[in-house]
Length: 164
Image (cartoon, rainbow, N blue to C red; front, side, top):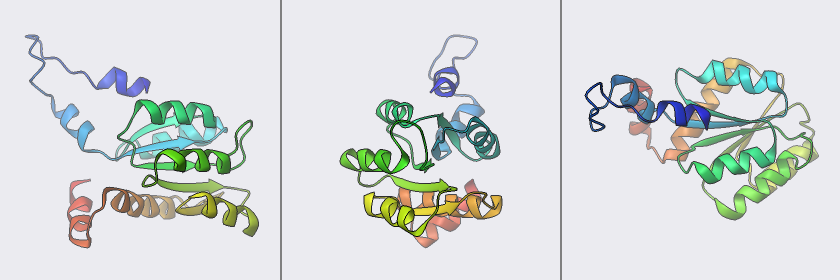
């Protein structure tokens, strides 16, 4: 959210708000990802890893994630941990699905027991990756998730890979 507030408004030196900078055009083209994890290192690390290709939002608990979702309709994918204090990831997924059936939710968790994974999928998660995860696998899965979220066809996906 702070990133959006700080970078969304670009005004030229003449005060003409209709002139957009190169950075703003790139900013609007990037897909967006909400990272939800109570581990600060995971949130910050993923945000840094993805910042060149994605607009990233970070939430350290489920309540923050819901607030960010209310304020930003443009989020394409959620990366969500399961084990968090307060409302856990499965409860968060269930809450998100009551309001948004189409948002792609990718679970990243160390608690990937078959029961936990089944529970997350039943509540509406689209896919899961077990922690510790392979960065390349995460990046590939995230690209596919964005393509699905945006409703791209195979041809569009090829174009998307060139653009991003």
